[in-house]
Length: 539
Image (tube, rainbow, N blue to C red):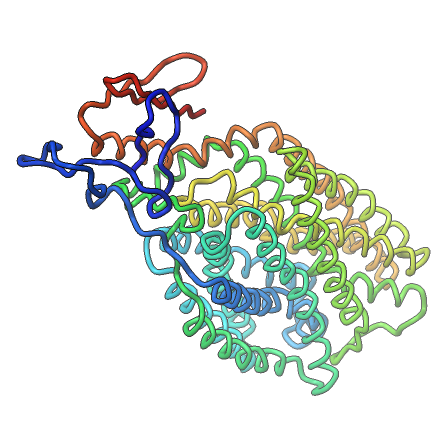
């Protein structure tokens, strides 16, 4: 890029991006100094050709990434749809059953920073391909484990978590480099629709395959077939765009040195919008982790308490609630993600802090909805389902919006690391422990009570109540994000702009003077001896 003042004296017009407008720069003379010959093109190294991709190809790549995201989240929750059968097969308690999800999440969070580092510095498509191979291979192998080796089943869930970390960390950054502004908001909304849709279809697939075959193992044998198709589509159709390509902030093209991982982490630690939004995401992860893992079992026990179903004492368990909850998750997820993204897109035209405010409001309303769903379950199942659906819908409003917040407040070179740290933090304090904690509280409460299905149900109900408090805290974190958002968004756009301006100054004619003015705002002022001048300010 080469920006020079207009040739008309006294104007402040500037040449635009490379290839968009012509600019007057002299060819360097002998010894590397600008000569007196006529105007010529900017020297090599000051501009890079924009990275372009046909719109249809970008949309096709986004569709493939959405399909893989669907399979990714089906793997997250496929166990929950068959949990009672798996517990009976391996003879594991509630607390150990919750530990299955904890192992999965802990593996994911420990490997996410590694994949974030690789995604910021190496080929993203290759990293994504390795992740798909890992989770599909581990899922298939888990279907052949005998009941005497239950620890291998736990281990296989850990490997699935490692594979999932690569995709959850890197795929959103690829979309961020294919689309920008409103387009990116819409595409991320569609991408994140597949979190609740995939989660719901995980319940549905597990429950449906169990009912068709009478064996929960076949659910883990169907998934690798779908994942093989996903891998082929990824390799054939998804490009690996340069970092920041959509914003034309290809910092390497203007000589920006590659920062270290520690420098990236320090930068993110000072980015308060990123910090507070990450804590908000952590609260969402805590609740969705506990709810997603235990809700089908909770609803089944509620039906037993109401006398609508007999207790499940041996597999296969006919848990219709897994299917119902899965369909509910799919429908509310689609509506919630679209509603949140569209509200964000429209509201931020009048309020630049719209995104975190929408997240805060949705969480603060979701907390009482979830509380009522739990309290009303032993009284009326219909009301419990209604409030549970409202709570899920409000939680789903956040998925696309929080991703857009991250992409808008973090510079492109750090987005992979930022996504990895957000995933790690969200899982460490969120859904890594919430399923286990919920099961542990339930088992502890049950130990001091009579052995009955009613007491088992009440123990699980009361262990869920902590989720309402956590989700309200998440709403508060997003309110704090709103206070810092505009400053951090401006900071995310500043580095690339300033570096480009300095690169321009070095190659333009020597009869231009350069000065940096102090004051309330920093300004780069470029003047010509004859009086022509141009000034550009930045925050």
